[in-house]
Length: 146
Image 1 (cartoon, helix red, strand yellow):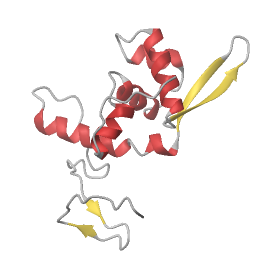
Image 2 (cartoon, rainbow, N blue to C red):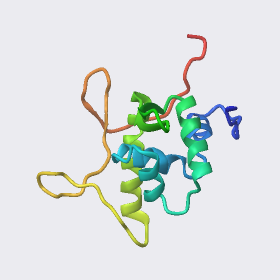
Image 3 (cartoon, rainbow, N blue to C red):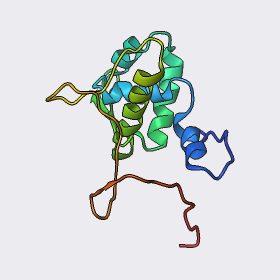
């Protein structure tokens, strides 16, 4: 399967969307993240997706290193789907979208709360070096010569 390049822009967002930006793709990853690891479970949870498209997207996600497969039945061959470490890192994207939706959608379906208090939560950034919370962030270009 050929890699899809829709955006030829030197931007992390554009290049990430080249991998996870197709229709249904992020929703498929989210279903696996939520524990639906069998093809039929994913298909049932995503009302409206065709079997062919789901199969195509799963193969593409495996090629891109987001999903890995494990054979659980040889006759007929059946696979379960698990997220790779790269796929698991999309949890932050899911959470950011849920928070954005709870703040901006006319009809909200989910929100993220503190498990102990039930209080709504927000996103925070922390220094990878010190672990301290960072209040002011800025996006900077990466030195490609390194």
